[in-house]
Structures are given as C-alpha cells and as structure tokens.
Length: 180
Image 1 (cartoon, rainbow, N blue to C red):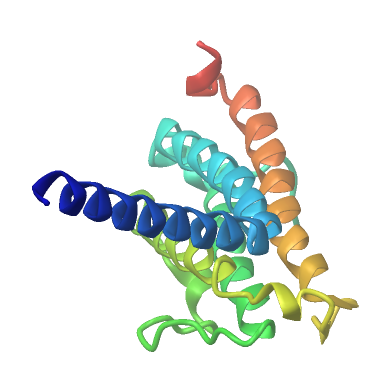
Image 2: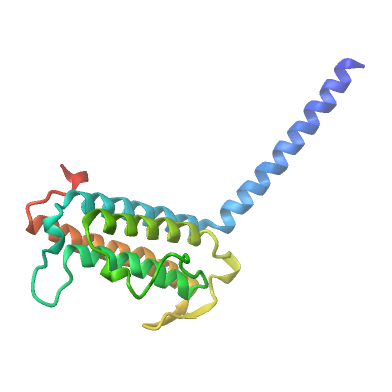
C-alpha cells in the first residue's frame, strides 16, 4: 500500500508540474512582444547609462552646435520621453516626477538618477500592456498608432539617442565602455 501511495503522490506532483508549465508557457507566449521589446530596450538603456557615466561632469554641457541638445539635455530628453510615451499609453508618471521641470535637472549624478528612474519605470510598464490591447489606437501627439507602435517607439527612441550619445562621446574623446 505504501508504494501505491507513493506512486499516486508522484503522479499528482507530475500533473501539477505539467499544469504549471503550461501556464508559464502560455503566459510567455501572450507577452512575447512585450518581453522582446523590454529586452532590447533594457540593452539600449544599459548602454546609454554606461555612456552617461563615461562623460565627465564638464562634458554634460557640451553640444555639437548652437540650438542642439547638450549631453545632459539629450539624457533628460530620453528620460522625459520615457514618461511621456508611457503616459500616453495609460501609465501616468510617478507622483514625484514633474514632467514640466524634468528638463531643468542639473548635475551629472542627478541627471543619471533621473534617467535610471525613468528607465525602471518604463521597463515595468511595458509588461503591463495587455496583449489584447496591442492593437488599441493611441494619440501620441506626434502620431496616432497602436500600443504596439508605442512600445516600438519607446525602444527606437532610446536606440536613436544611444546613437546620438555615441557620436557625442566620440567627438569628446570618450570611448563607449562596451567597445574598449
């Protein structure tokens, strides 16, 4: 009788494990687009932060020409855009983030902290976008597109400014840390 009970318990555990695996696989497939975008964005964000840390405090005021964002302004633009795009998709910024003054933050450490906070915020919100809502149209102000397009815009925007900051770095003798 003991061996039979052990077999029954083992079968119940296997069935439970199988059901849990099915749930996990189903969830992963439901959020495949979000998880993929989140992963690419996270890689871009990591490199932007590495660049931000590689610039000196003085270089944060450098700009390639009049009327073009400085290093610090470009980083704050990315932070603000992270919040803006998420806000348009239904995720208001944290209460302690003032969208009207985010571009006025000064000092390398403060700018990096603001960027990191926006990165964490937007990465979290990506996974909160329901797969069934990816086709929902959103007016972003600069374009009307669905939420999938909004997620892609977040990813692309960060990548665009990573490229900008690479050019800024090279113009200032700063080697992107990952290419040393």
